[in-house]
Structure formats: structure tokens, C-alpha cells
Amino acid sequence: MERDLTFSLVTVLLLAAVGCGESAPMGAGGSAGSGGTAGSGGSAAIGGSGGGPGSPALDPLSANPRYAVLSSDFSSSSIAMLDADFVAIDESWLSSGTTYPGLVATLSGDVVLPNRQAGDGTVAVIDRFFTDVVTRFFVPSGNLNGQLRTQGDTGDSGFSSNPQDFIFVDSDSAWVPRYESNLNPAAIPENQGNDLLEVNPSDMSATGGRIDLSSLDTTATAGTGDEAVEVAVFARPSRGVLVGSTIVVGLDRISANFDAAGPGMVAVVDLEDESVVGLELPGLKSCGRTVPVPGEPSKLVVACVGFAQPFGDEPQVRASSGIALLDVGEDGVAIEEVWRMADYPMSAIAVNAVIAIDAQRVLGVASGDFAEVSDRLYLLDMASGAQELVHESTSSFVIGEPAYDPQSEMLYVPDAAENAVLEFAADQGGFVEVGSSTIAPGIGLPPTKVYLLD
Image 1 (cartoon, rainbow, N blue to C red):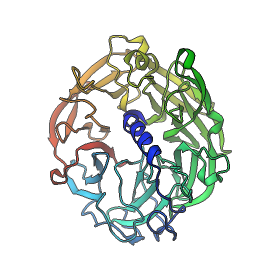
Image 2: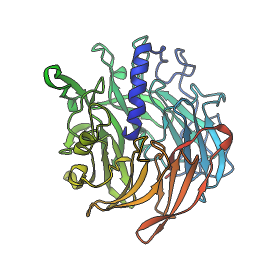
Image 3: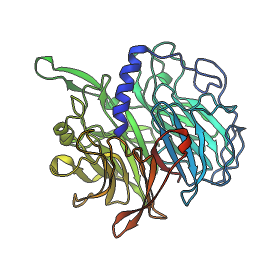
Image 4: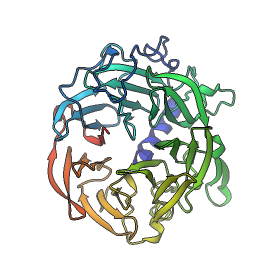
């Protein structure tokens, strides 16, 4: 889960110690622990304007949004909707304080939007660890299409399926990567995790379809010397990209205690027969972030943030991190280019919050060290390995996930230290800062992610 892994690891350890409450059944219509039915929304009209049926849930927007900005302090979240000029339509359209009728859960502090929205007049929101809910709204009406819990009733087991993405296929099918594995061998399939769970987007109900990714589990060594032990490593699917009838899903391949990692890999899933093949990315680890390439529908970029024990050890991270460019063709998925940090000892380890600009250039964040080095955003040429500094912040772990709009050639970069989204225009193969936008200053939450609602 790229740079979110730091926060997720701390959260896992804390919540494992205290346990968690009972989860509602899939499609529950009440609060956590209660029964009911999934939302009363109707079908999303393909290519429609988003007026859409469904039950009223959020305030209507005055225009169709082009961008969304997620602001969060990892306890609470707020989502702003902006127009094509990056002007706010609603600075806090959906937030952790939202209590509108029809919602079975409001936002936690661990929220993401999909890699790609469906393009059918809806916006999906994914609430991850220990909330385990995917919600779709019609825009601009704000009506609820539906809300789904990504697991059934697990009692007091403490299991969280931890949904990572919403990969829309068509009006009848979408797939949700579930990051966690249920360690109870007797768990029913809907509660097992480590898989792709099928959802019917028209009403946000579980179809019963599931693609198990446990065949891509492995083992790895945790600890060193006399304390070294071989431990199970789970596939841990994260972000995915759909190309034709193929889904390529990034895998973190980390153990239950986050103390070991397997070789870098993506899962290649053929939806025609639901077969699964693992494509290994030699020399890399923790390859959960998979993103589309603008203007290149068959290509995708995979960011591998590396693995180190103890966490953050620079030599280990450099030895196992990098970025790969893949192409999906009739004969399968091919590795076109790999940029390994181990081959560039003088380059910044800019592998966090990676997005693609085109088939040759990507943007990535090199995290600071809280002492001498602050966060820096770099533009990387995959062919030459050259890096160009785009932005340097004033603190560490503050540059979030940016968004690039190929139509306007504008780049939007959230910087929590600035409490603003910085705006960059394409200029002679690079980017130049041209302004900034402060998002909902009254709510006190820094911007962390920007999304192009394509």
C-alpha cells in the first residue's frame, strides 16, 4: 500500500492488541454489528450525467466534478469535489461527520478512492482497515447507489478484510481486492480475504464471486542469525488496473506480522476463466501500487516500495525498491522497463505515491527522514533513469498522492506541510509551479490525496 504502509503497520499492531467490534453482514443497512439490506439505490446509467436514482444521501453538487481531494489526519477524513478548473464545488462533500440517512457507515481516517472511477455517473469511496466498506454515490445528485461491507459477520475474531480498490468491469461486475487474510482456517469464503471479491455495481451487492489469490502466497525469512525463522507470506492484493478482460493487481507479499516479505509480484487475473498467474518482478519487493498510464490503455506502472527489517533501513529499501512498466497484450503481460533503485545508488528513492505521466515518465515521492531531509517529488525518465526535482517540501511524510490531468497537462500535489494542493503546469518536458489551493481550511484536515475522476 505504498507510503500508507507506515501508518497501516502501526494501526495493525495497535488494533491487534485491543481487538475490534463485531462487523455487520455483507450489505448491512445498519450500523456495524446490525443487520439489514444493502442500500436502496438503482442502476447507474452507463455514460449518464449522474442524476441517477437511489436514495438521497449527500447534498447535491451544483456541477459535475472533475477532481476529488481527500484530506485526512488518519483519524478523520473529508472529501472535497472540484470542477475542471480545480475550483471547489463543495469543500467537504463527504466527511467523517456526515450522518445523512441511507449511509451504514461514515468515513474513518483510512479512506481512498479507486484507481479509476466507473465513468457511469457515480463516484466510489473505499473505507479500508476495520471499516471495510465500499460506497457509491451518483453525481451530481448525491444520491446513494449502494454501500457494501466487504465481509460477512466475523463475530469477535478481529478480522478485517481491508478493501483496497474498486475495479469496475461493467454494470454487473466489479472486483474489490481484499488485502488481509483471515487466519481462521474454518472461515467461510466471503470472510477469507487475500482475494478479489465480486460486486454488482448496480445495487452494490455481493454476487458470491471470489477469485482466491492464496496460490501466490509464499514463505520468507524473518529475523537474522540464530533467531531467523521461515514464516508464511500472504499475497496481500492492493491496487489494480483493468485492461480488456485482464486485471493486473499489485501484491505487497508481506507476512502477518510485517516482519518478512516475498519477491515482488503482480497477480494477472483473466476474467474470462478467472485464472490467476503471478508475474514476478525480479529484485523488487512490496509491489502493491499499480496505476494506469494516461493515453496508453494497454500499459500500467507498478511501484515497488521495497522492504526492510528494521523498518526504513535505507540500504535494504534501496536494494529491493523500484518501478516497472508493464504491457498487457494478447500473449499476456510483458515487462517493458524496470527501474531498480539498486542500479542508481546516487538517486533519490522516489517510489512512494507513484503516478504515471506517460509511457516513459513517472512521478514519485522520496520520503524525508525527519532530520536532515524533507519529502521531495521527482519526475523520473524510465528509459534513462534520470530524475528531475519537481517539488521539495519543508517536512517529512507530508507530500501525498498527486494527480495528473493529461487533458489540461496540470499536476496537482497535496502537501500537508503547506496545508494546500500545489498546482503545476507542464513546461518543456517538466513541471513548473503556478499556484496553490487551500481546501476547506476550517475543518483542520491536511490534504493527502488528489484524484482525477476519469
